[in-house]
Length: 72
Length: 72
Image (cartoon, rainbow over all chains, first blue to last red; front, side, top):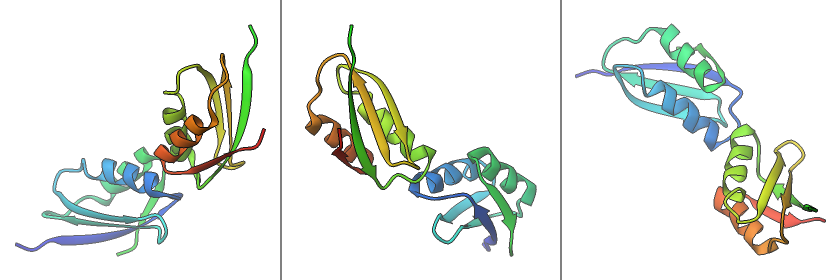
């Protein structure tokens, strides 16, 4: 089974609490298998079993209080 | 009724989540009436009905993942 990997640039995260807040929201999107998030790098990498709508990821990050943009 | 006010310098806080983490721990100390915490200023001001042991405040801040030092 292949996994789809999408990367987003996230602005505004400063610490581990911020990473946890983003992780918690993105983890609620159906199909998400794993999440890597780095406040220092400003990155969010989402692995999923099916293609996820970018708008869902962007909305989840905004729900956590930050802004995201798909980079690849 | 008078309120005792103590101020601490807290290092390591970067955002509102950090402030909330410190607030949550310090709020558990018996006698604490109000708390002002600023990540930007690196300050924690604790108002209490009775004198609180500095070690308790320092320990609470450390529990949240930061370090505190009494300044006044």
